[in-house]
Image (tube, rainbow, N blue to C red; front, side, top):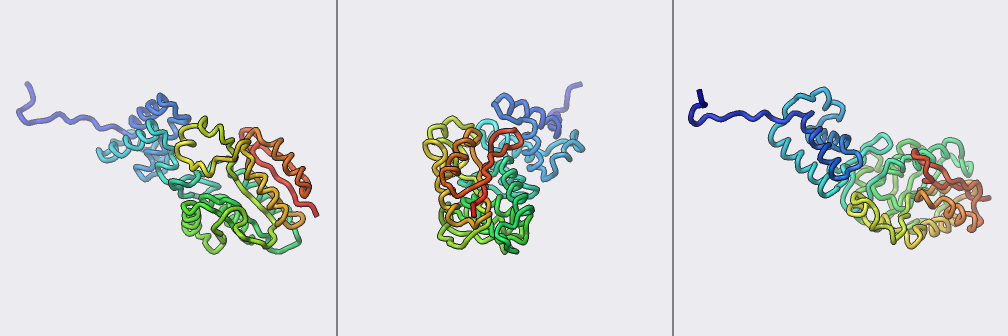
Length: 301
């Protein structure tokens, strides 16, 4: 017997599991680097749940509004190649949640290693025999580096500069959300932003992409990160040179300089520090992928 006039057949709704699998397949076809993880993170955000909890509710049907929102997220990730962190407006960094925003450089996992090297230095060395070390970050962006240091090493005096008004506002907002507004002084301006007091540690993740190579970067980077945070000049080391000279002027004897660099810039950055003549114990250190990523050096007496 046929269905009565006016009746309808109920279409089974997509489950959490089906949605993830289909979305991951779509993202893979679009060239996304981590399609399954991205699909899970985006759906977890839609459903306001931890990513691992998705597996506990794998067979749960999604509501139409949830499906529509998820499709839009997947479109942005796959078609527009918008990074996950920018879609959901946050990312994890050093065990905390950092808000991200348009026109501000999005934190990278490898930068956590820069924080770790600074913290290790602070644990092992009290540069000038002071009870309270002063740490200065140049170009703080979202604030992820200086806020992590301030919260992990609460006896330090932390200062950060930023010339982008968008980034400065975001860094202050992240400080407030992490309960660290009283721990960090933000200064509006480039480099040391007029600061003339001595410092024990200088840390920075400067722009280090060669200007001529910006167009070769992935869409996630070149289309979404501000050029100001990428462009390191013709050889990628313009800002590094200034940071080395300025740090030599303001670092106390025994103080540390910590820079993140491009994977092919270790030798050249080492040479810049040597040529300056004010640093010793210059080291090029690797990230978790065994690539040159950090340069650390100590100010001579």
